[in-house]
Image (cartoon, rainbow, N blue to C red; front, side, top):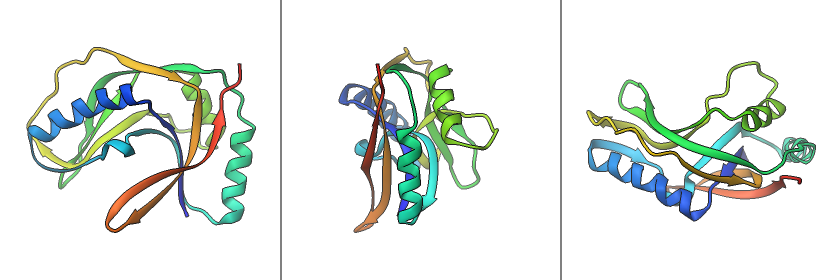
Length: 164
């Protein structure tokens, strides 16, 4: 199973993200744009996992202790790539989010939280600065990624709730 740990958003946040994705799509020559149900914030990509690794991921998630926290989305940008860029919505620096990332990840590299809006995007468009928006995060999910009938589907298979 191909797995990752993520934050899934409520409908209001997802709708705001979709407006940026749609604006980008309108001004692009081409691109592979994220479907509404797949908009999320990845905490850690795990890749292909067997049953033992999946159980281990759940155990690590069960050991996380965090209170609900706010995430604010406040900018749009891109990672330059040959053949088309990866466009994303960026998240304000957030101590709790960084602590969760480092609790899940043994690597020392810096966390750059973002929500992918589109891949292989070809455009000259440059978005305007956005008014910050977001939501309170109460849980994180272990997600399964699979391709069904040519469509990428992300399904939550395990949840870790914040503790008050």
